[in-house]
Image (cartoon, rainbow over all chains, first blue to last red; front, side, top):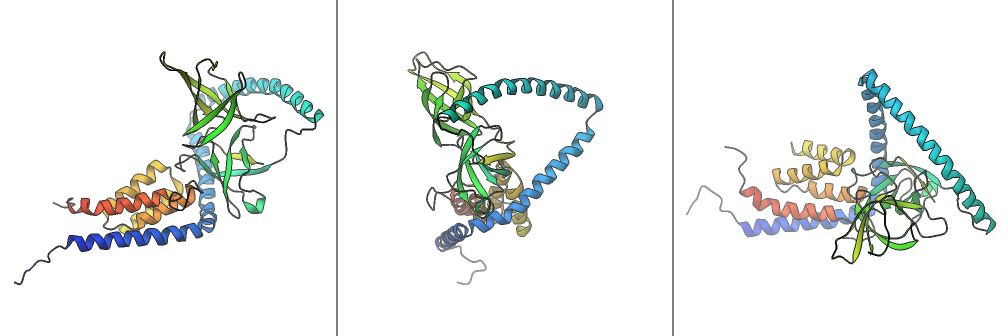
Length: 258
Length: 84
């Protein structure tokens, strides 16, 4: 019987679809796996251009602000700078005496590192991953640690190409990191929650106060985060604390790799 | 239209946060039939922003998710009407 419509053959088209998608996935995965270095290198100019444009737009938007609001913001920033300078001076004395002590015992605390600009940071990256503009050519190697210019420890280098590298922050979801709660020198296991946040579970007897520092194990004790919130239930045997990363993940601009 | 949408999604992947390019790619997978470009974009996201060294398949989660979405979108599209 002649018909003026084409009967649908769902099973054949479904199999064809599955074959096509599977082929695309296999070939695409293999291709992208092999070419990941060049792809990262190719994307770097776009990120640099976007960062430069974003900085320029911030300047133009600043011109649109009223004189009064700029004056208020200027005054507030001046006060913040003064208080931070005082804090830095008091902390520098502590840091200098600690470095001198380490030097006496034959341990050097600080070593020079490789400065790298952050090309992409969260939320452009869905995980807490930073893409840096330094790679093998600049001396970056897998496994090296990434620090903030101010000294906080933020993650490890997990992938390096010729001129770019990727840092996986300790706060990335599911990443577990050994650390020490500075108050009481209690060893803890930080569990990354993403977005620059961690959580720790400690026995209820351990004293944890908001503002306590969490530092990396080791003789130098680089800061990883600060306790932001503490919660517990009366029937709970553990105390749960939320830690905030030393770095603001969405505004990190430069890191030191060493 | 499809090429323009793919180019737009590509620019979003390079320049915007994840909460902009994910929905855009999912929308294109639903709107366009057999949108294989979505799989390529998912793999690109994994290469640019992913966490490496989890194993070959786990290194590319968004590519896999895009593949599953393309497969699931086909029967859904058949039940959607885009014109009156």
